[in-house]
Amino acid sequence: MLIPRRRVLGLLAGTAALVAKSRDTAAQSYPTHSITLVAPFPAGGAIDTVGRLIAERMQESLGQPVVVENVSGASGSVGPGRVARAAGDGYTLSLGTSGTHVLNAATMTLPYDVLKDFEPIALLSTQPLMIVARKDMPAANLKELIAWLQSNPDKATQGTTGLGSTNHLAGVLFQRTTKTRYAFVPYRGTNLAMQDLIAGRIDMIFDLASLSIPHVRAGSIKAYAVMGDNRLAALPDVPTVDEASLPGLYGSVWMGLWASKGTPAFAIDKLNAAVMAALANPSVSKRLIDLGYELFPNEQRTPEALAAFQKREAEKWWPIVKDAGIK
Image (cartoon, rainbow, N blue to C red):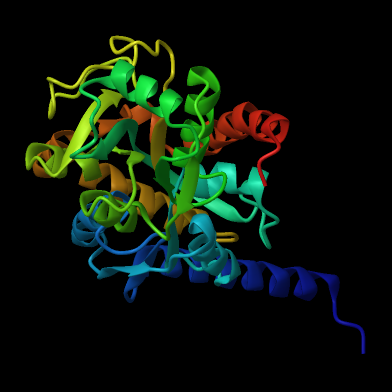
């Protein structure tokens, strides 16, 4: 039996209206249950600290719990892998860094594409690395540290979060610049490396300022330089690398937030708004600044800005890693 054309068009229009209404309902109700934020390194580290701080404020805007789950391993590549495999429904998020969402793709064979298998939500913050060492290191400043390393080749150790990680690459550049040689010791997270540094089992770390600051203040480790062009307000007495004899040897870690591929635009918009509200909170921004972080301006916190920023970072670092032969 043939169905009249007018009736077919009516049925199609009705179906389209139902689909549109369903989408509107989903957009208005999202989220309906808790959201998991996957942190790629162990609890207690600098990245985990930022994730928990942001998650706590995001849930105020979203009206549902945002639960931080630490999924560490393989230089921070395991956590993003879990998010890449999750349903694109806005309920599984990836807290990531320049290491996990750019550098790992240059040094490892990943079961996911860092640029294509995630939906960008927002840039969070950036922070310079610091060159810190065990408290009984004989060198009084960076110039003396370099001289000590040069006179003790292959005897020192630097903790990293894995081959090709940001702190490992910073160490490689440091070695090339200073003509020094020492061993790299990989850890599942910088907080674990910090424990060994405090205990004197390794000699130094090129670490996020936020993790180093409390231990420098407590006298548990020594700080030699900030790997940026500005001193930190939280540690104003620590010179920059420019001031301490290594001009231009900069190293930093930026953080962002992504969702699983296919997450609908309405969910991304709500998540981005929750991040913006969290970072606009005076107590959150003050806490991040006190920890040594720098916040991106609002125009750089959009999903589109994160996508463009991540692509530029990949175009910058992937050739460098390849030329260095780091795998």
